[in-house]
Amino acid sequence: MVSPARRWGSAWSLTIYPTDGVQPAKTARGTSLYVIELRGDLDAASRQELGVQLRRLLDFGVAMTLDLSSLDFCGVAAIEEIASIAADARAREIELVIVAPENISQYLELRRPTGD
Image (cartoon, rainbow, N blue to C red):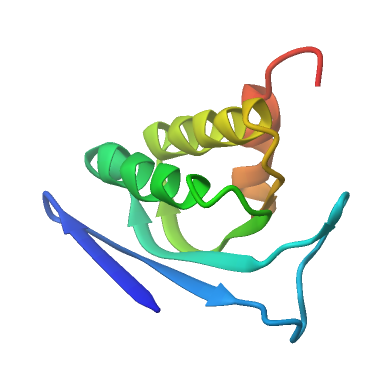
């Protein structure tokens, strides 16, 4: 299933891969059922749509892996939205594993709420 999104000149796409037991992503509590891959450019203009799309996926209530390794650009606003999604997942006790290159993951670590 592919769900492309284009907003305000910012081009990005979200692709969902059900693992179906084939190379599943391992998580602390088990196995992710879905891998969500983001591609393209995420900036302030794409923040709202990114949040809407990812929160819809959280509504399924299953463990998932968010793969950011194919992004060409990820701005601060998008990083803040991803961190907010991760906090929402924790609050709902949904395991969300984020796979990100070092230049993005270091900012996600800085945004992590204290006490985690």
